[in-house]
Image 1 (cartoon, rainbow, N blue to C red):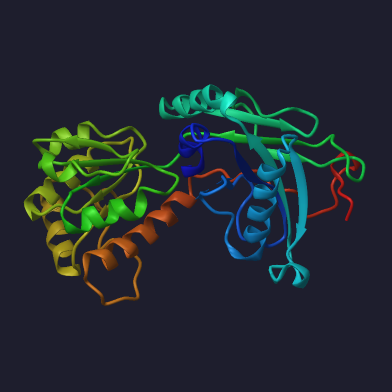
Image 2: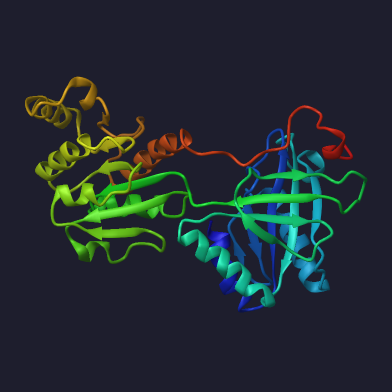
Length: 332
């Protein structure tokens, strides 16, 4: 959540506006919960681009120019009138953040870094967001009357459920971390060569490990794993150690089909059953490109990682497709 990480720094420079996709119905560029930060001279994160985002930025900067501080909820139909053809409806929530709230947002950021989630609650008749323990799903209560202020946004701000451990900091490992670091996941990066881990992006947890067994033992429970080191013998030691753990997710191994054939034979000779060996995906990465540059390989592997992530993520609650109850009904 780049927007959240940047709020304390932005507030040290002056007011800014936090725009949140409060609800969606039908097709939309971004999911409910996506957010963007707008200041007089900076933009952080995105609502999906296009004319919707342009309108939102203009609205946010108008609020800054005129000194508006009351939260606002706006409805946008993604049709020809907005220069878009998604066909859905998006509700955007605007909250003006001022430097006096710096400590509040810094505390939320620190709680997240410690693995503790928070629930943002913003009411139309309030001065700004309040925070509670994240014990419920997010959603939007629409106003009961046209132009009413009795709306309420609840937005969970949670540590990502998906954890990935990358073993290897060579060319592909470096490219892969660069692709994955901005995404919503907890990223661990292991290699024996500590100097190669020194340039890790913010938020990536690095660990210099002397052996494969140490690297696997240091990995969090529930983590998914990518093995792509500079040494085939080390790759084999890593996947063998990973197969002995029962509390991890997917295992991906970089390599050719011939490398995987040899690995299968060696793992079987070391006593692993076929169903255990089948936990490993090799070659890792989506198919369809013959480009073997580190950047291209990283993109293809990252695409498969995103598929893994879809099995564990819990989406933000969207507005229902069917007509909602009276208390949630909009002025459509």
